[in-house]
Amino acid sequence: MISDKIKQDVMESRTVGTFDGLRARVLQLHGEKRYQQALDLIEISSKEFPDRSWYVYYWKACLHSLLENYDAAIDDLEHSMENGGFWSKEFLLKYESDFEKLRNDVRFLSIVERSEQLRLKAQASSKTDLVVVAPGESTLKETKKALPLIMVLHGRASNVKETESYWNPLSESFLVGIPQSSQVYRKDGFSWDDYALAQKEIIESFEKLSQSYSIDKEHIILGGFSQGAGIAIRLAFTGALKCRGFIAVCPALRGWDPLPALVSADRSIRGWFYTGGNDYSRDATETLCEQLKEREFSCKLEILEGAGHDYPSDFHLRLRDAAHFILQS
Image (cartoon, rainbow, N blue to C red; front, side):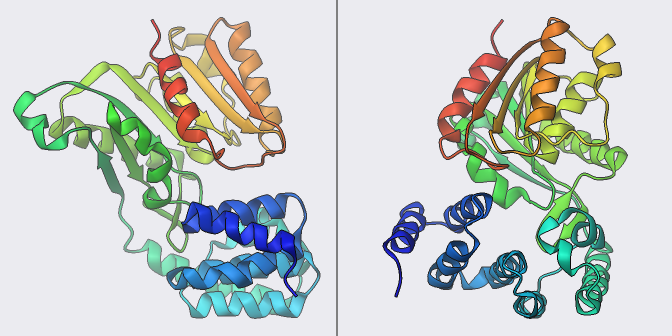
């Protein structure tokens, strides 16, 4: 018998009408440790997205592992791989905490090794990509109007397709450029782990945009989610990509100490931060904001209590305010 609560969860996911809507609800239930409810929701709703079956099986594996149904978790990972799924060895053994109790299981370790071989094969032919969304694009070449630009960087294990919909609202008045890293992290997911390569690809994407569009160099914003937000912050403060400021959503700041860069950074750079109250990166984000204010940088931090490491549901509204804040004189 399906509970009224599960029926409500299903209706919520269908109201959104997208796989991202289902993903957001599953992540919310996961964050609330309502693992069985998340599994029930997946069973009911995932059939609407047959092309994402590898992803769905992966979710199920995580949830079964957390519920200590280890045989089911292994089966789900196998099914995910049968449907094309793979992940980096580093991710499965280091970052995916849901599998912590499986890390000595020989079956799990076999999956890890086979998965890594698939990732390496994909890496051998991987290339960077760039998605561009422009306001009134059909008339741009006629008017030669210089456009404000926002360069958006996806998170680790994400891609341009997953990222585009969140930032599209700015395309009413901004040129939106979303580069995709060539660094394969999982199926359909990429990282910026090699920073030197990441910087090179991002700047090449900016140069490609500059060749095709007239860009207002005084109105450039960097944006990003998670690892992408951390990279955007680093590019801004080191001056690797000149900009007015950045919009950082749940920034992941591992592996880089911003303080040395702040000594010589342009004090006119402005930063807008968002983090969830339960986001693992919240403390680091708050600390960075305090450090910026101590050094007389203008920044703003918004925290949504109860939320985790994800975009807020009202991001489209927050985004416009964030862009306005960055471009203030």
